[in-house]
Amino acid sequence: MADLIVANDISGLKIYGQQQVDYTVDSVSGRDFAAAVARASMLRSVAVEHVLSSLSEVVRLREKKLTDLAEALSIISSVAVSFDKDSKTDDMKFSWELGQAKKILDRYGIDTSLLKQFDPEENWNIPGNTDFWGVSKGNSSKVQTDVQYEMDKEDNYLQQDLVSVQSYFSKRDQALSTATSLVKKVNNTMTTGVRSIS
Image (cartoon, rainbow, N blue to C red; front, side):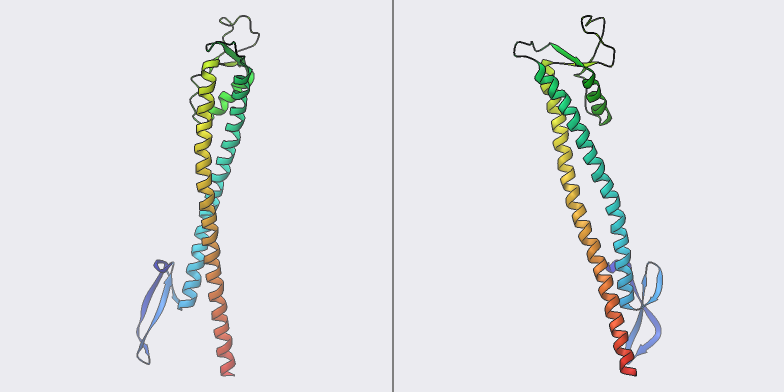
């Protein structure tokens, strides 16, 4: 906060040999020290509030991504579970839901090359359309692992962001508290001075 406040000597003004100073905060001069500190504290709290707003939006987006990825993982896991013990690793399961999972994974830039689009000519025995996507038994666990890895990574970032949010809340509260206590002190000093005069 000290770098927000610039002290300027008042040219030719000394009282009892003490050089008098005015303070400039955010390019506004002519303040006493208490007012300068209060103003700097308020500016700091406003700056922190802007950071908090941006960081809160990042947290919201991370939470949405985690929710979306959890949905995709649930779909992929349910398809993987549907393979029976006798299925071969190259056996495919197709579903419309896998197409939804693929859209989610594509949105977040997660590799979906292991998912295969339904081809009516290849899979003549499965009714449907090209919105069906499939995964082989052998690839289903790899896709699940990739999604889980992305979720774990995102969750770690989310936890770091939440710690930062808490830290910024503390900084904002501290700045507001400093400004408020200084304003009270100035008011008390002025009230005491007025009482002394009268």
